[in-house]
Amino acid sequence: MPGWQSDAGAPLCFSGAGLDRAEGLRQDRQWLSDQLHRRDTRFLLVWHDRVVLDQAWNLYLADHPGLLKDQGEPPQFLGLRPEGALFAVDLSGLDETAIRDALVGMRLVGLRRAILDMPQQQAAVAGYGCMLLRWHRHNCFCGRCGAPSESRNGGRSRRCQAPACGSELFPRIDPAVIMLVEQVTRDGVPARCLLGHHRRMEAGRFSTLAGFVEPGESLEEAVRREVMEEVGVAVGAVSYQGSQPWPFPSSLMLGFRARAVSEVIKVDGREIDQARWFSAEQIRAGGEWGGAGANHFSLPRRWSIARHLIDNWLAEQP
Image (cartoon, rainbow, N blue to C red; front, side):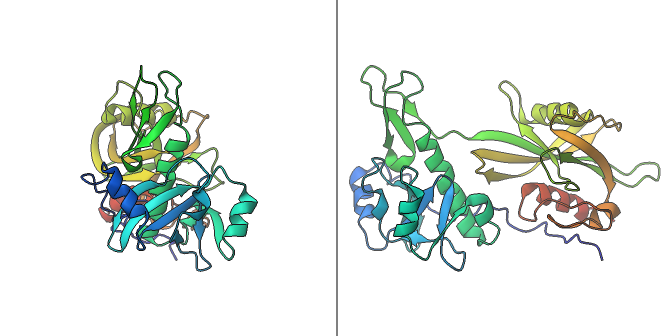
């Protein structure tokens, strides 16, 4: 039986947090202070990109910041839920044993593992919190003059404390393109798409191609450059398909469909060590991530934008 299941309409992981980021309120220090002390306020706890889960693998939201009292950095405001305000608390300065002792009965789990069993909205909140806290952790000092910086506007920015500088810093997001390369039906040859195997992946796992956008190029140019660099295939028309926040470490994946104008594959060998053209029938016979289908290869996880691109393409094929 084919391992493929159409999931083109499924929400993408790390999107859909459902938070009101309260732009008009978060600049009010008194309002933020009031929110910190409300009984309905909750706190997302993060330790080096690990989040705290309860025994049912649900995201644990504490009712007080507790462990952060002596950490220096304030809780960072994530937004408003219907139930109340939500802040993110960075525990990375604490010893792991101290955290486990303080959170008896809870699990401290890496984000990549946690999202496998976490509900969609919880994964989005966890990813958002981890991205924001990592940025604050890595920008405690001004990149321009080296002076200490401080959190502003509930965590939306940081400001250099040196009077002669005063630079304002904003969270960095690294744009990356991810693309499904296709050949349309022609002269009796069915449509095909190109998938590659990254050398760091387990054997048999194939996915779409991807890469970071470089300075001075458009997204479309990045798509064409990355495909040529990784598999040696020339691309013509490029069309936008969707996006996915990706907190590993702080990316935004921008999805595209790319029309191939050449066919011969020549992998770069550095990142991609295998690449193949697949028909819709072959992909439908593939297995899920971690398994293998009839053709001994597996597809990306169903909540990823890579799978979203593949499923949307498959839905158009006979």
